Length: 272
Length: 260
Image (cartoon, rainbow over all chains, first blue to last red; front, side, top):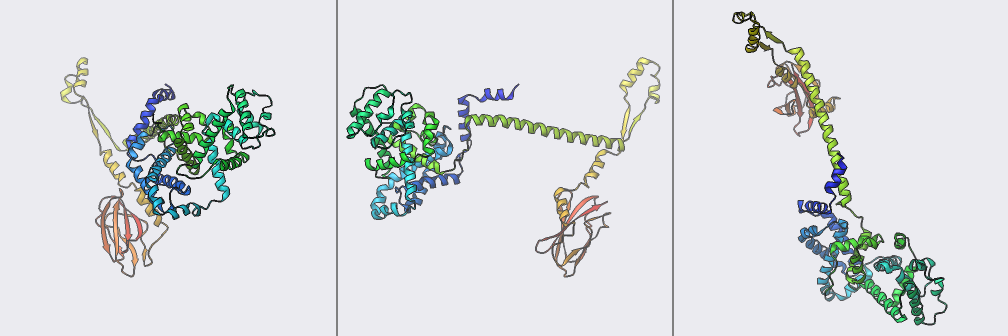
């Protein structure tokens, strides 16, 4: 009898594997990662909020201890809820992040009332990041925000580039119009015949109607693009007002992002 | 209707997909949710950012690797059991062979023939009865001094591995302590009561002597400031070990005694 065949048949059901995981978790009440690693992860999570200026530096240790305490109190339910769909460390980071947000929500007003001036100063004086690093981090964040738009990633990227009047690469156009429904689509994205922002949306409406086989007016495209821009700005500025982007500063950031394409940013293209 | 946010694990799932740049592996409902829900999207972004700073450790294997682990684990366990059993049988075979060899050399099997005795003479004539006689009155076997005693004697001289290692350390006359010098050889043998251990102790330091049998069990301990000692308490034949220790409980020497 082939042992491997036996094992595959014996264990191949999802239910069995799920039960196996649950049994393993129930065997011990200890965490799936060691205590040291949990403290390390908490440190990282809290540090990110400190760097974002959400948590004052002097409150960092208190917040860290509160989060660890919260985690230990609920460790059983946290472990029981784990199904194995993601890596355990990622899961723990998500849990710790949520718990940190809970602590911040509780204490934020108190921190601001306690020491307004010092709180504001710490944002700018306690970080040693150079400008380039900040821009790099922000462009990475922008890329992630755009990726979350999923199947509209290339469309939004292309339309934003056109909206902010940046030079558009042919490859990006082809990613959007992958069926090549429009001949000489590059001419549609030409910047030469634009008199005002209205012309931009007119062109975009024409393109969308051909490529996506729809019947939209320029206003619909304008509303859709504005909605996307507002969403991007909101996600850049939050949580807890980490930044103060508006349409203009988004345009600057987008320009940095669009013109400095990194290998990392091309992941989406490679994968799709 | 209040929008239900993603669970921590779903956020973790999305974060992993996002860090790989491939959201298409996610279920459709998750993809749509993070597209529309700012709160969850922010959480996902945060976790992704944090992940990019961390070295990820995976403790629990995915289902597929779990299966592989169990499969290869069972193969390894089976091999270990088979190898263990073969070693055991091998050593059992060697032992029984050694015992069989000892049997040949040491035991005398003596068959006592009863057919000449007066009792059985009467029934010898009838063949049928011959057989019946043989059946009803089986022959006697005599066995000489047992193998067990010989085995015990041999076991009494079996060296103790850890104590042997300790003795080896001092075999090149690696002595500790400046004022004490051992003059007895590392292995001293002789009859019980004839063994004397000697050393130079000019400063008449207090020394502690410990004696062990070949099983590593401590038999007794003596204190002396003399330059020699005779372990009269050891009377049984066998292999023994002795340690010389100073007042600071430093081990100065370890030697062997064979009582013949």
